[in-house]
Length: 526
Image (cartoon, rainbow, N blue to C red; front, side, top):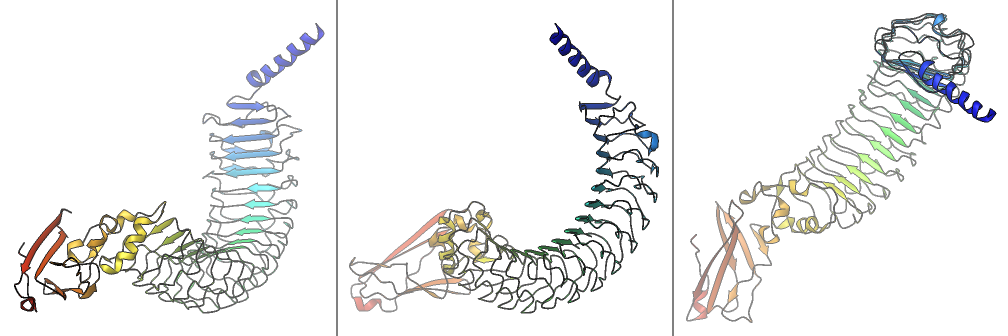
């Protein structure tokens, strides 16, 4: 009886908690986790249990947070205020949240000001996220009490300046993100206290100049994001102290040149896409044997030195898309045996060397689309035994006899993704617009060149000649053959019309004396 009574009381208490005791407009999944998301909710939930440790307030009409918003003796360790209508937070609002470790106030488009003492009593915070608000300024002592902070984000605000002493107390900070603001400059001492910082993101600001000592005191930095700024020059010593830097993102700046020795040797990922690089010096990537990803797309490169990538023995992914490249040195990729993908699309490349990819046996993806290629050398794809994806469309292919090797490879290759049906002929005129893979090998013929697979039938089957040539002049096509005996010669011509139908025309000529067929002419009318 006692046991049954105890179980009944326990179930009653649970029912009370989940139905009657949970604040209005909220859901209480467990006694310690509460989620509130009702647009009619205009004030912080009342009667919040002191047992609640995680509270999420999302898409409500709450406009302000103050001291009375939270109960005395609160056990909150995590508080998230997302996409509300907040326009103000009292400097005393969090004074009762002494156990708070994670705080996020994000997506509040009317939230513009943070008081100096807002975080004074939450010294146990390890994570503070203030993303996508409209904060414009920060007092240099606003984070003074957050000496345990490890993660700080203020993405997507309207901050244009960072006070020089803003981070001086954040000695345990590991990740800092001020992306998508309006920051114009960085004081050379701004990061000096961040000895433990591992990730720094300042993407999509308005930074144009970086002092050589900006990152001098950051020995543990592994990732640096500076993409989407207005940086024109990288000082030779700017990154020299970042011995553990693995990822460097410089996409979308205005960089025109890079001196050899600029990049630290332990880099694994380097993104220089969408800058204004006109040339690469021979030693710009020297001593970077750990680099696995290099992106140079959307620059203004017309040539590259033959040995510019020579030391990148760990390189797996290389992108040179959307430059002005006309050709590639034969040894451009020599020694890069770990390459998995090469992007060479959207350039002006008109030819490639047959041995260009000789060292790329494990390469899986090759992009050569949207160039000026008319043909490819015989044997180009032989080393690429692992190739699974190839992009070749958007080139003015000349579908003649020189394309037979490529045609054979293309129809036999085991490609998973290639868009081979989009490889269209630009020349000759009868094949213009036709898909290469839909042509037969016999369709690929050359004018003014010896043809070895056009036999001429004679009256004696024991005699077959292979010395025929095809000629074209002023739109007139002729075939010239030398035959050892010609009491009878039969000429047969096959071609495809505009609808793809194969047509055959034939004629036979006989002579009573074989000497009469010297320089004989057979005319086919069709």
